[in-house]
Length: 207
Image 1: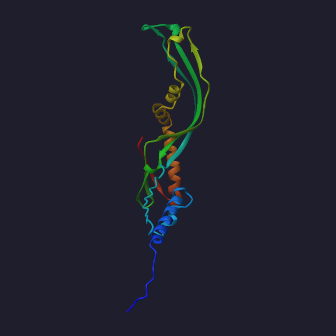
Image 2: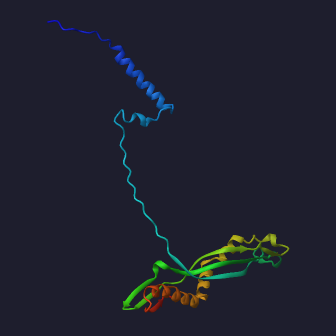
């Protein structure tokens, strides 16, 4: 039995796909075509994103009082020549300053414990310097001797850092201690009595 046979040319089957692939590659490399358009045709690429978002809560700093601090900072530098003090080489610099300071507590460290019916104990942590605002520093005033060029310049930045040093902040907190205690009792006492008007409150201070 004779079967019906058709002649098929092989070169179109080889050349045409090659031309198509080459044209597609050129289009992708030139930026004309987005590569993702071909993903579906060749099976595509599957991607999964796994994210973990963590939230950092604020310190809950509670400002209990504010101060207006004004002062005059003075810095001296002694003049020396070959290790010998020379008065004419002395430098003196003054900076007049002022700013508002906020003092209070870290509210997240305050503990309120119910001791019984209508009875509460409030433990207040150490008071802290929270921050400052409305800073104003005047241009420095200098008093220098005739030979002051022998002595290094006094750093204005160093003077400002000293004004806002930890030691100064602790001093301002210590000088306002009684006011901070009184304000703590008013602030937290008001909160508790808004829930329990008959509350009897005992305060314990870390300082």
